[in-house]
Image (cartoon, rainbow, N blue to C red; front, side, top):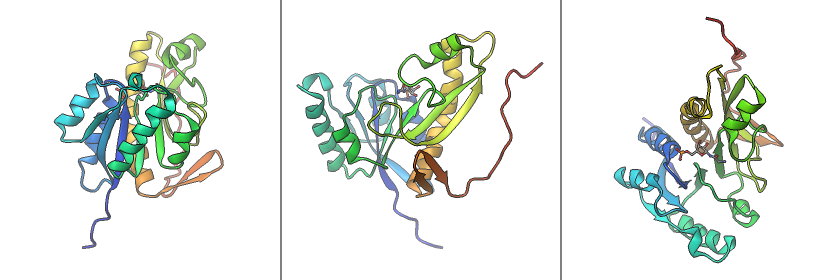
Length: 221
Ligand code: GAR
């Protein structure tokens, strides 16, 4: 039997409830998963996800951005915490602070984000409201590498869901969130195991199945 490869040390950055963080924690409980959550960091000391992380025995750090005079000051303290915990990869999971190029460039190719829309559609906030207002029939979620532009960067994984006639932002958002919890662990697994190659805007995945079936909406009863 070959020795297991060391698992990559991941920090998850959150601002709120942390359901994506919880999905990553669940995936990393499998000893065969190529990464472990070594730190959960929040810019909000009251983020409910911090308690969940602690209950799971994960180190947590709260760095209140309001206690720092500038974005750069705040990020410098974050960077120190990441270095102190020997972090190799960063997952943004509902981390609601815009990051400066100074910070982003320190983590090029090693920091990923989840966004509740099929990028490059609906960057920014209120994605479910905007998808409903536009009348799209498919909506979804994306995981992408972080670059200085907000919600830009090469896309690693996406999941599409149908928009149903009776949807509200709440019901649509819940359908998207369930898929976020599927694609974020998938994207981290691919990144941590070295299976991703960035080629311009495209990310190629070693071992892609080449499946070509389509999701069509509406489906008739
Ligand atoms: C998720 O839906 C995530 O995609 C979104 O915030 C939510 C966080 O939920 N992120 C963004 O909008 C970033 N642009 P969670 O705390 O339960 O993971």
